[in-house]
Length: 274
Image: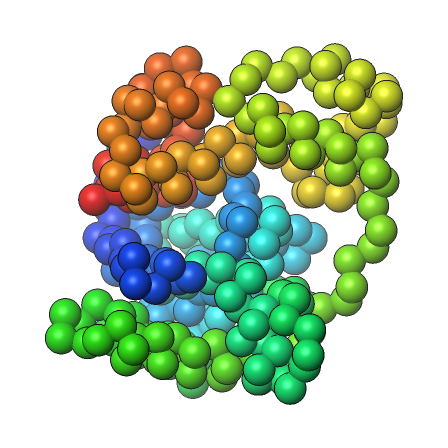
């Protein structure tokens, strides 16, 4: 049975159709938010504006405090949670990697606009935290034009890119494992027994799970759940009814969808949509 939140989080989601390449979230008190392991299709950057929390990103684990910046490449399995019920606050930005790759190329003077992941999972950078707080203020000020907001976003990303080291080129992965991921991407709303995935990859169950975890950081069923939630978020952003989204994403009922969505995002579907 889920435990009640003693400290309901004050949080704000921001998005604008005029700037489809960025979404933002501000949490004033994160004591009531508890995340399961999850990943995003976006590139995610968090600035810690107060307090401290645990931070796990793959094999990286530490306690991050005010003045820290966390960096989550697309697909990185991660999570942040309160420390000893202590208050903490933060702003998260979610960038479309295709758009971000173009900014990286312009900032670095590169011809190839492909997104390049970053090597650092976290860094202490109070000046970037201040810049992130200012960016959120600009995004949410009603009298700002889309051009002003976009200029502020690009300025923040350029500052961030200058402080981070480019990551290594990803290793070549087993085509069979990628085939399974593509199969899940195409059929995430369906029941996908492990045996069916094994047949699609022509691999044994134990080997498939190990290889899949090595490549994606989670087991196939966790990957499928994350894929469902990513699709659900897109539908909710478009204003779709919650019951309809629950059905379309393959959950048994709306209550099940609500529980999983909150576990993965630390917000209810209604909070995220509205």
